[in-house]
Image 1: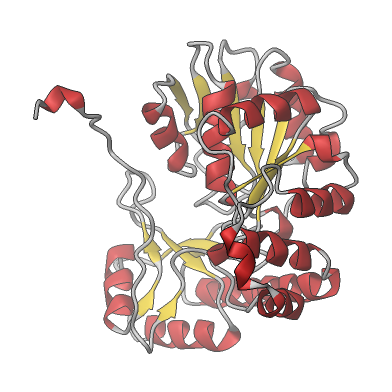
Image 2: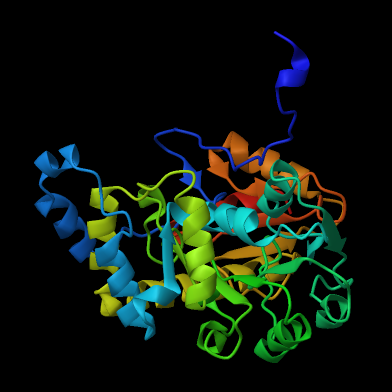
Length: 350
């Protein structure tokens, strides 16, 4: 077959998914805790015979639950198969002007992958030397849209809400997407700004704070006109997305606020302890508002050396071979026992 029939792409590279029985997995920012007991009950109640039927096209039950939870009309909510699915659909639906979409040079690397896949031009904006985002860089610049992860990944740093609003106000003719995958762990959400700004889309996921990475549930909130545009693109690709068990588990998760808040508190407490312990060992740790820390070891030790030693012990963290952050490690916050085991191995290297 002729080579010119096929796309040539550099795909997104996810964190490795090892399968060792004794492993400690701190490399993909999953929750170390199980989902709500109500989620488990919902999965056990699910009637497998219903799998013969397609799910609702508009995933009604979970869409309604999210609308009620956040205080929006259901016409303001779009649900997809994880926030990656939601974001990819937004890229297809909203960034077609030919003008470049702006996002940070160091951020969630899938943004650039989607842009290449859908032939969207890109303008990557450098971070400040301290890895923070300068809101002024996104204002008064010709563009076809803006995408900001808040808190940013992999840096873990959150932006001030006022700075995000400045970006939204400065780009009234273009869509501004705020990816709040980690917002439950820190930072200030702009979800309540959706009624104020017709150009704002806020994206969330169940994969991190709700312990449902395996269920693949993500969603966005925006004005109904934008939601309709996004749905039109989704329905031009695949009308039946979220599966029936995931919909029921998602609804159950949304309805267990007490468990949700308790698990958040545990992760945040462990995050602060982890950051403090690493600093005591000489690491530089960026201020984290996420469920992970981003840290560089004291010289002459390198991030690659720490990564390799931990991997030998079946402890997996994330090391990015990207200029500017190639001497940093992204370490997911695990249980206290997992963190203690990881720290004990790191101490042997110091």
